[in-house]
Each structure stands twice: as C-alpha cells, then as structure tokens.
Amino acid sequence: MKIKVFSGIALFLLSVSSVFAAWGKKPEIRWQQVYRYDLRQHDQQLYTNRLSLTFNCLDKKEKSLLKITPFFEARRNIREGLWEREELGIEIGRDIFSWFYLGESIQAAWLRENYCNYTSHKRRDTIESETIFLASHELFSRKNFKLKGFVRDEYTYDFDIGAGTRNEITMGFIIPVGKYIETGLDWRHIDRIHDYDSDTFEVSLILVF
Image (cartoon, rainbow, N blue to C red):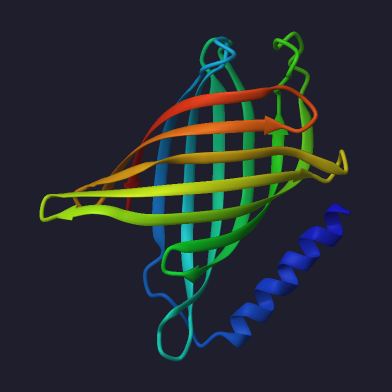
C-alpha cells in the first residue's frame, strides 16, 4: 500500500510538470511555530514547529493552477518533555475560488502519542493522508492593519490502521505584521474518531520568506 501511494504521487508530479506551462519564479518558504493549550486535557500543552516550501504551477496566463508544498512538522508535548509526533510529506492543492482552498497531503508520520494518559511512549511509524478544506475572508483592511478570518477542516486517514483517525475543525484569525510575519489566534476542535475529543486554544507566529 505504501509503495502504491508514493508511486501514485510521483507519477502525478511528473504529469504536472509536463502539463502546466510554467512554475512560479520564487517558492514561498513558511516557518510556523504554534503553541496549543488543550481546554479538556490539561496535560497536553503542545508546541509545533512546521517548515514548508510552496511551489506554484502556472497556466499560460501565469495564473496559479496548483500548489505543491513539501513540509516537515514536529510537535512536542511540553508537560511530558516528549517529541510525540513528526511528519514529513507533500501537500498538493488548489485555490478553487479566491476564498476557498482544497488540498490533499500524503505524509510519513513517526508517533509517540498515546491517548490513554500517555502511559506508553512506544514509537509507531505510519503513512497518513490528509484532506484539507480552507475558507478565508479579509474582514478588515487599513494601511497599517489587516485582519483575515478563516475556517479549516482537516480529515486524516491512517493507511496502517486502514481507517480515519482524526477530524479537526479550526476557526480563527490571521493578522499580518508587515510583509514577512503573520500572527494567528484560533480555536480548534479535534475529533479523534476512535478516541477522545479535544478543544484547544492556539496562538501562532509565521515567518514568510
């Protein structure tokens, strides 16, 4: 199954390079740092570090048709002093409308998560896919201040288990600070399909290059 998934992604990327007219000249690098506080499980204060690189596939009119984003993400449980999740993958997506994005990622995940009060930290390696729906809208704009609202849904499927494991809904705000910095504030509901739920409060800092 893993070989088929990676082979499918590789063939898709090869076809993309031949079909589209051009690539965007400058890929966007984003370094995101997120602090998450779980309002239900107080032993889950999490810090996430994510580095991504987005390439734009353009049509002959140089309009964006497809975005391809390799990424690496590492999440640390601060209370436990444990790097509980690392991900390495690629996301492929498109802006269907100016306000709506649809994406799909495939990722290798190295997990030390345990949903039973973290009583065991035995590592589990797996392959996951993630379906992403993102709606966003600029709520306020002035010369020195902008405010964007967004709603995001992420559905995660674990190929080793053969089932969906999480559905996460996030609502929040993005505040650009100059050209290269964004800050975020949001609420997230995490439905662990075969386990407990969480409601989390998150703050983020994103550097854009």
